[in-house]
Amino acid sequence: MEVIKRTAEMQEISLRLKREGRIIGLVPTMGYLHDGHLSLIKKARRENDIVIMSNFVNPLQFGPKEDFATYPRDLDRDNKSAESVGVDYVFAPANEEMYPQGYDTYVEVKGPITEKMCGKSRPGHFKGVTTVVLKLFLITQPDRAYFGQKDAQQAIVIRKMVTDLNVPVKIITCPIVREEDGLALSSRNTYLSSEERLQALALPRALSAGRDMIMKGETDPQKVRLHIKQMLESSPGIRVDYVVVVDGDNLSDLSAIKGKVLLAAAVYVGKTRLIDNIDLEV
Amino acid sequence: MEVIKRTAEMQEISLRLKREGRIIGLVPTMGYLHDGHLSLIKKARRENDIVIMSNFVNPLQFGPKEDFATYPRDLDRDNKSAESVGVDYVFAPANEEMYPQGYDTYVEVKGPITEKMCGKSRPGHFKGVTTVVLKLFLITQPDRAYFGQKDAQQAIVIRKMVTDLNVPVKIITCPIVREEDGLALSSRNTYLSSEERLQALALPRALSAGRDMIMKGETDPQKVRLHIKQMLESSPGIRVDYVVVVDGDNLSDLSAIKGKVLLAAAVYVGKTRLIDNIDLEV
Image 1 (tube, rainbow over the protein chains, first blue to last red):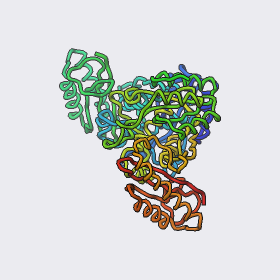
Image 2 (cartoon, rainbow over the protein chains, first blue to last red):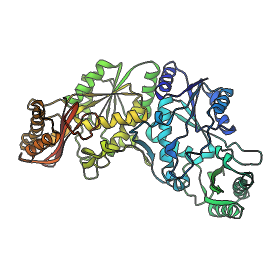
Image 3 (cartoon, rainbow over the protein chains, first blue to last red):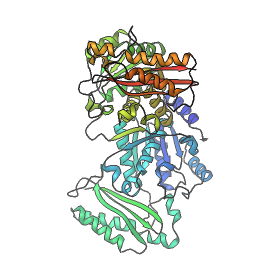
Image 4 (cartoon, chains in turn purple, blue):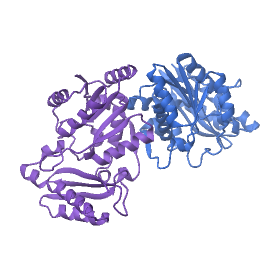
């Protein structure tokens, strides 16, 4: 495995591999790898000749009051994990490599899919995501790119960008990986105190309860949403950011529950913001 | 020569050509070809294995009160001209191919280089340009792309986008092609009445006078700018939009004339907006 720090070098390698006819899979990460990331890498390993993992905490997708500075980082441990699951290249650029002095170009998906949910709570977040992801695509030239379903809205926004801009890459989303007790894996779980860690279980439990309602025949999205919201609001230590029950393809509002449905929520547990979701086909 | 109308087909051909190791040159145009366009194509023909010319009047780069509807079009004549200078593929998509229903993604270079000059007179223009050009790059996968120096600001904005987003394409600008009497070739010259056609000569003449001042030793950019502006303002039928004397690499203001300098102006002749420029190294 090679660790590449320079944008120009990574792009040169990627373009050479493409000329040689190799199929490239990219797994974009912000590092501090957990089993969720590793599941993406393993899938990429099975499906491509070359696996590139990017490891870059993207300042552009953090708001001014968010946790960019404190976001957990451990490059050495990440490199060991990446190597153990068969990554060929780790691309780990410094901020100045990705956004040199005078950087001024942005890629933005407009409209409801970036304005609601996390887009509402985190203005500018998805603009930062689409900008860095397009840069990573152009630097690493992947045939396929792998994203976790935990960031369901992110995956939908990236698919939209790829379709609109004619980016020749296939976007693959992989299921959420959870702890045994149900908490979705996230690098931010490391922020939680042991009390908060227990309180955080309210999030997967409330979403599961919403799914159970649907399984038992409930077709009114507002009733499901309200049930999830009330469960969360009555859970100690939880402050609700948003709860939605929406179309699983484009996040639009549903008049009735049918087809691909996404139950998604964001909550604060203490100062830590956690997101989770369940997608299902009805 | 093949004329391709579908985005997916053009991208498939381009990706196949790349896999086969062919070097692709792209000449993006809005059609109604003149000798300026043909000079770009001829250069692309000399430097690449495959020449793709796009022919698309991009609605996104026209303001609501601008000339999108009346912009001159003649696809048949364009195809004959393109074939005569050795184009391999003409990519001529319909609007709905480039911007299907629900299209919502934009690429934007921020900052002074898109805010001054044409960016000030035509808000949103360069956002339309960078969005379509990135799409064309992703669809046609060029190694090199050719732009006319007549749109000097456009070339600088595209270079900035390519650098910032790590697009693996080399941007090549080619000199302005002029009529014998000095008027820069432009598809919009077709709008001019015979009287306006004569009045329009004030534009290249004023810019030439500015260059002559510099050649004779003038180093104050404001004096040169004012001279050009006054010449234009005293010319019958001419209304000045802007005149600048700026850094030829990044359009920044100059305290003194030195290095790469761009003399650029936009004027209205009747209802027709014309731009022209002279770049020189001092």
